[in-house]
Image (cartoon, rainbow, N blue to C red; front, side, top):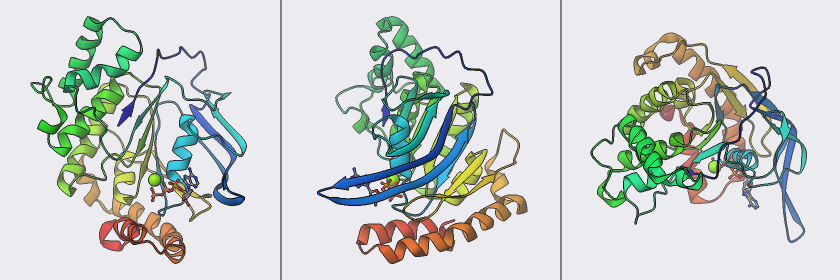
Length: 294
Ligand SMILES: Nc1ncnc2c1ncn2[C@@H]1O[C@H](COP(=O)(O)OP(=O)(O)OP(=O)(O)O)[C@@H](O)[C@H]1O
Ligand SMILES: [Mg+2]
């Protein structure tokens, strides 16, 4: 789902100000006197235009971190700076894409993609023209008047991407956006995402995934979190030049990074597995981190 809000603010910050910076961020949930520490002492920053992946075992706090950045969850302590300013409320400069596509079933592709621009109070004609450009860009030209149920899963996620990029957010938050797709569609969507991101100068991206190879293929850096409470385990540079082609996944350099991150994360996944008993969580972990699923 792409969530969209009012007019995007103009920022006067220079390029040296991180788009996003977490300083000793902690997040604890409290319910009926019980506390659960989801994130502990998390510090990292994301530069303007950078693509950063967030990787960690199930339950380590990835979605929570994204929700704090989006302003949906208050932090418990530490600081969270967006463009150098402390910010804890949802803002129109951030777009969000979730795992499940959340296109409105009663709206056509055009009207779904146009929604954020309507929130920005753009004149309908201008909004429609801009939406059509993004629909074309994601390869859905000709499907403007189709409804979500008339599209495949991959096409719906393309429409979601069009909706997210169409508002030209400064910060795009993506929470496992391709998890529901089959393996081939997912790989294609990875290249499509990079293409759209490049063609639209798509801003800064924080991308949550369970797949090490997806994180490596897409990102400039991978932030690896420990098992809950999520702390920074390591931040890994991904030095491959752009544009990137899927064939880099077969290079020894790529495989070396995947192996390195796997080694880092294996212990954390085992820790998390020791904590989890639910069927869903175990499924998740297997999907996440067994060697065949790198
Ligand atoms: N609103 C909430 N209230 C209480 N606890 C919560 C809330 N949201 C998340 N948690 C807890 O915080 C921890 C981190 O959850 P989160 O959803 O961030 O994990 P995750 O890394 O995204 O996991 P997954 O990879 O399975 O999506 C979990 O133990 C979860 O139960
Ligand atoms: Mg999550």
